[in-house]
Length: 82
Image (cartoon, rainbow, N blue to C red; front, side, top):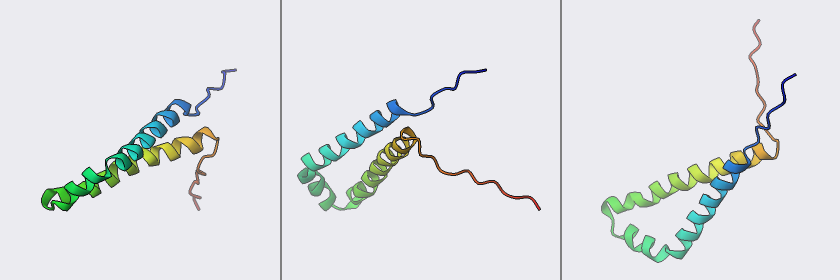
């Protein structure tokens, strides 16, 4: 019998969580700088959109890894063939 491998992503959870926290701390610490640049207009107006994608990527991966670390997975439905 092969040993069952523990597939829970504890390290990934910690890394994505640390990056998420760092991003939020950086945003709150430098919010005046962000507001100044966004108010300039032009291409700087894309800054909030880019930041939203970055936050979404890291926070979403953290959340997915967190639930996997807890042992909660999405159900895998199969199609019934008639």
